[in-house]
Image (cartoon, rainbow, N blue to C red; front, side, top):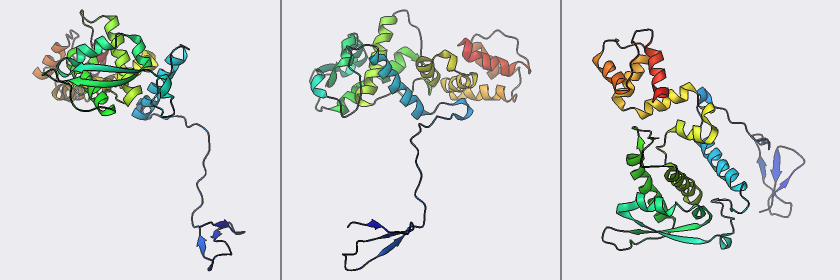
Length: 270
């Protein structure tokens, strides 16, 4: 049914041709919108997950725009899929990490649309196809990578291995980018400080960000000791404190006045 705006700004009426005129009162003012881009505001120097996600997508577009021969990786439904080659990747469930690193050693894979096939322990292809299977492949890879290439508890931090060179880490980077651009999969357990340093540069990592991320890196009991140090609620001679500092090879002299400085210094040293 068509409605018309009457001369009164507070009333809306139906057309006169209807059998009965009904007047609707508008009790609230219509919201006012502006087209100006909102500037993100961060409280306590924390970067929101949404803003990180937007910046991650933007960083992918920037990298792709620097290479005119490389189509932009995007999950946008308007992408012309006819121009994107399809590549079928076969991954063994028991060798997901090794298979994925081998597959993504080819940089051109970022330009292809992926269809994943999982091979079970008996050598047979598992039932299933589509985005769900591809997401499972990325999930399996990151679960194995958390244990093999990273350290930490609730947040995991990549560490340097003598048998894992720069080329291998570039393969991991392609897996990270492709997982997000192809099926919106992102390894949420990666250290937030590590991601901020990669996306925005180390100069944008504040001491508070580093300390918060460090406490997520620690076990629950270790994080409790760190909090006790920051609150000056633990004795310098406490055995658990000495064991905690020894685990990080801390040789600094411990006093009540230096506890906070020591705990703040540990994540930088680590």
